[in-house]
Image (cartoon, rainbow, N blue to C red; front, top):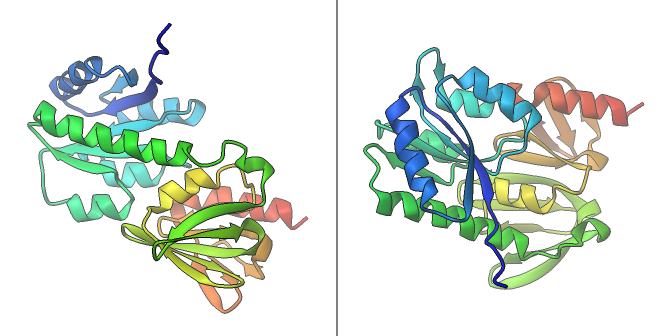
Length: 241
C-alpha cells in the first residue's frame, strides 16, 4: 500500500474572509498540508497558537488593530511563516524575521505553489538530519563546501546574517547557508540552546552574566528582545537556582 504523504498543519490569519477562502482553496489542492484554522482576528489565532503546535502560518500584515509583523514577533517559538499581503513595502521587514516567503495579493496559484514547495524543501532538509540527534552531543553543519561536526556544548551563540548564520563556538566561527529558524529546528531537542532575539540564539551553559535586557557570553553583549524576554529570563532564573 502506498504511504500517504505527511500533512503539515497550517493556519491562516487575515482580516479579509475572501483571502482566507482563496488560500484555503489552494491548500485543498495540496496533499502535504492540513489546514487547521482560518482566523480573521489575530488574537483568536494567538490563543490557538499558545496551546497547539502549527508547522506553517499564512499571515497578513495590515490588519485592524495589529500589524502582522509585530504579531509574529510576539509569538513564542513561532512556526514558519509566509506573509500574504496587498503591499510590497514590507518585504525587507518580513525577511528580517526569517519569513520563508512574501506573497503579494492577488496571489496566483503558481506563485503560491512555489512558496509551499520552498517550505517542504526546508522541512525535508531538517528531517534529513539524524532523527536521533537528541541522543547525540553534536550536529553537522556545512560551511565553505565542507561538513563540520560541532559539539553543542561548545556553541557560544548563533547570529543571523539574513540568509546565513554565523555559529560562534569555543573553537571556531562557521558561516552557514541557512536561516536562524532552520538551525533552531535542528537544535530544538537541546534545552541549553535558546532564542533570545530575532537575530540571536545562545547556549545558556556559556552565559557569564545576564539581566532582563541582555546576556554576556565572553566579551559579547547580546540583547534580549521584548518578544522573548519573559520566557528567556524565566528559564535563565530557573537554571541559575
